[in-house]
Image (cartoon, rainbow, N blue to C red):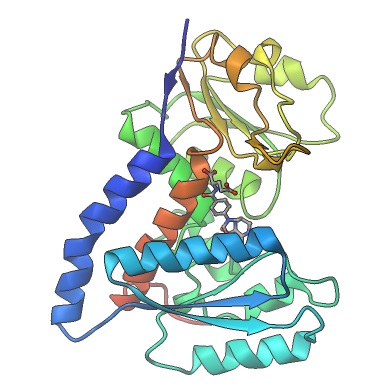
Length: 286
Ligand SMILES: Nc1nc2c(c(=O)[nH]1)N[C@@H](CN(C=O)c1ccc(C(=O)N[C@@H](CCC(=O)O)C(=O)O)cc1)CN2
């Protein structure tokens, strides 16, 4: 079998194109959706992702602003910035780019963002609502993955989804979203014994471990849908996922590439969440 590629770059472009009319309608009603991104430090990858977010927002008509703090900024300084943004009515969405410098607690920062402006979907209120199947902002990468599966009418209900990785921003929430869609979900992680024993049972395999090309065809069941969340920069400067694309695509039915897979979908879903925030459809605050 040679897998069909789910191109996230093309799908994200389609989503942005379709969003323009919705954003225009809001603007005509006097509401210009506004996203404020906070960037702490000068991590080149983070800077590039933030630029990507600003560019994508502009393309669909969402206005955005960037607040930059030095890598030496204290937690108190950052929390103060967030509190001011929480109280600013013209700001609909607040996003603090991760990772943060060591002196700042990511969790404290996430919990300081007003849940109704938490367009990353990381606040415990949004995570909790997602868990019980209530309307909420969904974390962008997991939301992007579900959107990719649905774009190809890939059946989730009754399927066995195996997640490799248990981060708060990808692994755990994507498992929960798949469970909400009636999949049977297995989480694997660094302490899992005999990883292959689990992955070989997966109808849907999600790799989010941060190890370049670790998941070869040996880990993939014939006909499985393989979603690669990894973004690993090799020494030669090229980008690769957690999945060994060439070998895995010989067994998979569908596969996502890196680049042009899940990454661009993360940004498209951020725009969707920002529009939702501007419409005031978000969960009510703390
Ligand atoms: N506050 C947040 N921080 C981080 C998140 C997040 O969702 N919210 N996710 C990641 C980084 N990220 C978005 O912020 C992100 C990563 C990658 C891409 C992307 O489109 N990648 C391209 C390749 C780009 C390249 O060449 O480097 C691709 O996969 O095709 C978008 C967003 C961590 N931080």
